[in-house]
Length: 143
Ligand SMILES: Cc1cc2nc3c(=O)[nH]c(=O)nc-3n(C[C@H](O)[C@H](O)[C@H](O)COP(=O)(O)OP(=O)(O)OC[C@H]3O[C@@H](n4cnc5c(N)ncnc54)[C@H](O)[C@@H]3O)c2cc1C
Image (cartoon, rainbow, N blue to C red; front, side, top):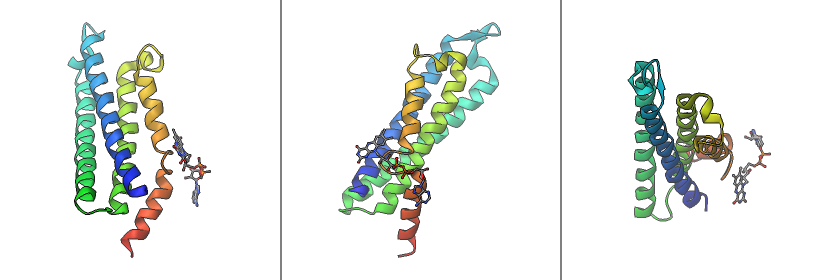
């Protein structure tokens, strides 16, 4: 159950991280500050590229774990836990950076990034708290 559920959580929240990145890119093209769209500011570009790198790392890990488990049923729980904990943490970190790009608007219900941020935070608790899952996964490494 945990092998299956945690691997799906990894994929879901790699997608959540990607959604947050895409929202931030769209908003950075639309919002004007300092006379230019904010994506023209280097600090915004730098933040967005770091987000992109983390999203791609999460996508790569979650896909590899899903494919590995499918090829070797019933799969290996430690890989699923690695995917779940890494991708949910990434979703939270990327959503937090995305919200920063939205500034104060990001905290309003006018923009869905505030919901993405709440969902990403919940994901670190649901399907097992990441800290506890880490202990279960660590146990498997010493079997
Ligand atoms: C959005 C969402 C959806 C959910 N969906 C489902 C669902 O569909 N089905 C279902 O059955 N459950 C579901 N849950 C429940 C979820 O599985 C639990 O919330 C989760 O396992 C954590 O349990 P808890 O909330 O009782 O926290 P607790 O176990 O009370 O933990 C609270 C805190 O104490 C820490 N802690 C706990 N035990 C230890 C320990 N031994 N050592 C050190 N620290 C510890 C935790 O890391 C955490 O920080 C959902 C939760 C959320 C948030």
